[in-house]
Amino acid sequence: MDPTDQSPEEMYSVWALLPEPVRRRLLGLMAGLRAAHGGAVFEPHATVLGAMRLRRSAAIEALRAAAAGLGPYTARVASIGRYGVNLLLEPTREVMATSDHCRAHFGYQRPTPYVPHLSLLYGDHLTEEEMAAARKKAGEMDKGIFGLQFEISELALCKTDPKDKSLESWELVELCHLQKK
Image (cartoon, rainbow, N blue to C red; front, side, top):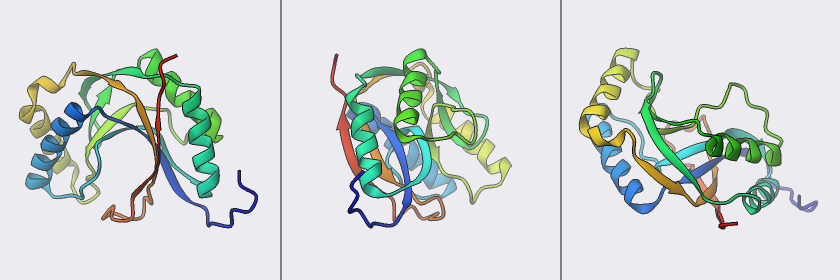
């Protein structure tokens, strides 16, 4: 950590960014869900670590150190989630190990067990019935999404204030490419 860094502690998350064809596909699915159910726009991603409070320099340093020890890995969409509006990823050894590796570098203590997923719609504004309808719609809009397999080769550090429901303050802070070993 930079000892001269006097920046305030802010909330950061680590995301696995998607390859461009998968990103475009999910952007279309997410736009369709927002058109039907409302919600804020955000970049498609797989959550590796949830929100944690850090100084910017410490967060960047931790991401760089974590990424240096990782290579690209495969992710596969398993199903629609039962809570929220998201796609669950198969919890393969690679997917889980990547999150655990990053957790160790960030010193992150999980408040709940890790569930690898791709959020499609943040639904704080929706009732449970509306979220169930959005989950059903997601499955209908792209039936071929289940079983979709793709390579993750980039991790991103994003400033993600969970109190900002508009998501307008969210920003990509650092991007690391995972190198084949």
